[in-house]
Image (cartoon, rainbow, N blue to C red; front, side):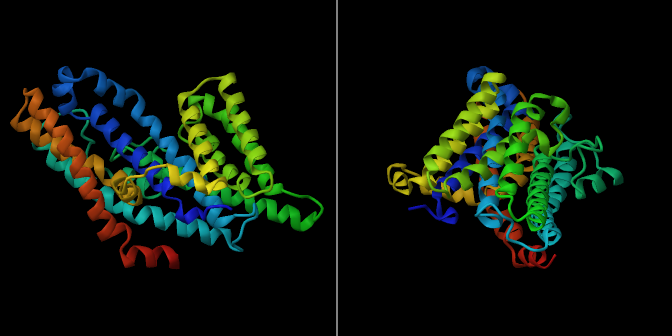
Length: 353
C-alpha cells in the first residue's frame, strides 16, 4: 500500500532540516557575528559554513518528488496546456519572492547605516531589479540582492524543463503510439547526464542542468515507488547514484541519493513511517520553509548589524545573537507565510495566471 504523497510528514521534516541548515550556513558565512563568536566554537561554525549549503539538495529532490506526484503521477503529463502550468509556477514562486526582495532592499539600507561589511548587498539598480524579477540575475551576472535567491531561479528552470520534456514525450507518443515510457526515458536520460556530466562542471552551476540530477532523482523515485516491483526499481536508482559517485564523488549527490532512498522507502513501505519519530516542530517548520528561506537573510542582516554596532567585540553576546537570528528567521518566516505566501491574493494570482 502506497502512502499518499501529499500526506507524507517526512517531506515536511526533510524540508525543515534543510531549511534550518541553510539558515545556519548563511549565519556562519555572512555577517560579523559568526566572526566575533568564532573563538567560542570554531568547529561548529566551520561545519555549518562548509556543509550547511549541501542541504539545498534536499529541496531539489523533494521538489522533483512533488512535481511527479502532482503533474505526472503515472509518468505522463496531466495538463493539456503546459505554458499555463509554467506561468502559474512562475507567479507562485515570484509573488512572495518579490515581496522578500523588497524586504531585503530595505534591510540592507538599514544595515548600511549601522555597519560597513561585505555581507551587505549594494543598492539595487534598475537592470538588477529587472533581472531578479525575471529570475535571470545569475545568467545576466547581476549581484544578488539576497543570499539564496539563485535557488528560486533554478527551481523555476527545473520545473520548466521537466514540463517541456514531458510535453514533448506526449507529442512523440501521439505520433508513435507503439512507443512506451518516452517521458520517463527523457527524464531519466537528463538525470543521468546531469549526474555524470553537467554536475561535474562548475560552468553549468548557474543553470538547471547542473541540479537536474537531484531533481530527476525525486521524480524517478516517485515513479519507481508507483510501479510493480518498486523495490527493484529503487535498487536500480540507488545503483545509478552509486555509479555517479564512483565516477566522481560529490557529497551533494550523496545527500541527494540518501534523500531519494528515504522518500522511496517511505512511499513504498508506508508502515515504516510509524517507526520514524517526527517532531511536530519540524513538520510545522517544513510547511513554512519557503517563506523562511526567502526572508531569513535580510532578517539575519538586521540582527548582525545591530549586534555589531552595539557589541563589536564580545564573543558571548554575538553567540547569543546567532541564536536570536535563527529564532527571528523562523518567526519572520511564519509571519511571511501567513501574510504573503499563503494569502488569498497570492494564491488567486498564481491560479489565474
